[in-house]
Image (cartoon, rainbow, N blue to C red):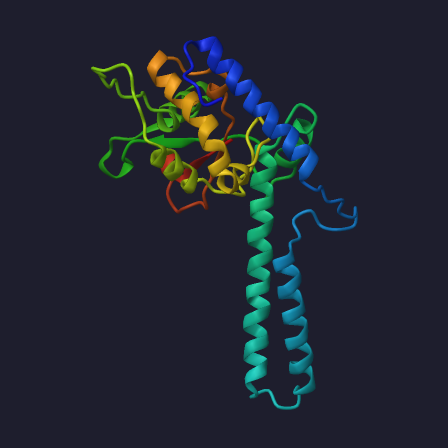
Length: 255
């Protein structure tokens, strides 16, 4: 797969072969765990270690309960608070990961969670927010679904710059591919293809000879594959502020 790709059909053919090889390798070589149905889905090894640490400090603090001025009581309180913060953080990360993995079978579960009784767990719809700077009187309220949709599209998907290239044949050095792979978050939730970024970060030396010709051909031929245009975006609201929400209080999660 290291040869020059002449046309768009060749890009699809080479990409299909590469994706099939990666998928078959992942299925045959990666071991899958079978967690117990009684285990919390958001539980992790780090939480188990922290739980043991807090439990041991709690026993030491109980043994010295007659002397409340011992340092162990302060250490136990700090460890217990840190353990609680870790649980909240892991739960939030688990919820965001679930939102990115919603499909036609789990969309009703997500709807049930988000449209339940009013509480801090979620909202049934995007609240009204402001566009512009309300401090100087140049803000506009956006309440309709169509207005919210257009605002999110403009904020998350700006129009690409029209760069002019004099020489259509572009040759990118291998070091650029290595730098891009190094920037990837290895344990980010996979996209629609189901392939984790850890595959690319751990096997960059093996995949470089196959990815290089594919990426170069997209520039040389002037095409961008339709499968690369498929993007799942989940809008996550940041913690509320004292003012009316605006687009600065949101952030996209792409997969």
